[in-house]
Image 1 (cartoon, helix red, strand yellow):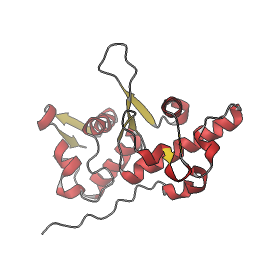
Image 2 (cartoon, helix red, strand yellow):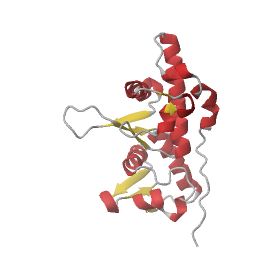
Image 3 (cartoon, one colour):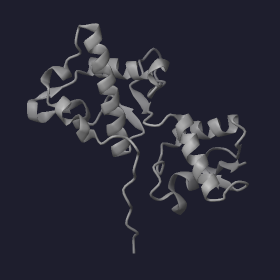
Image 4 (cartoon, one colour):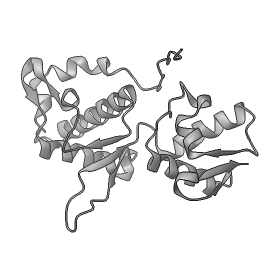
Length: 194
């Protein structure tokens, strides 16, 4: 019998909090007034991080973004792809979190079209995972990447099925803090927590 998966509380506000904003047609055109645009970019940043937390999206591709994230079919409006990039570039700046990180393109001279969405930054994820390690008495044990992403013990945890490369960034934060040591490579990699 399959166990029923409980919804994960990401701690982020529900995207329905933004429903009235998303019904406002001018919201889908970046505004020329710099003060208005700054607020608009802040709102888009909040909408994107909240949506991705709620939908458990760790990686976003500009070639196939969720239609309901950047658009509203009921008013027939959507943010242009160039404006989506402007919003994401805003989110990538250190002074804004950063809440996204562009994943380098594999083609020479090509602009990246995929990014990690940090509804929690790697440092915040490191705090969350380490708290769980501490709370469950697992200091001194070695857990594999698989166990941390998909194991029975993490069912219902907000990082379940986290992007593997992102998880490795999180674990690197813990290593840098002296709270873990990584063993092995690729598939067999694990981390011992201190």
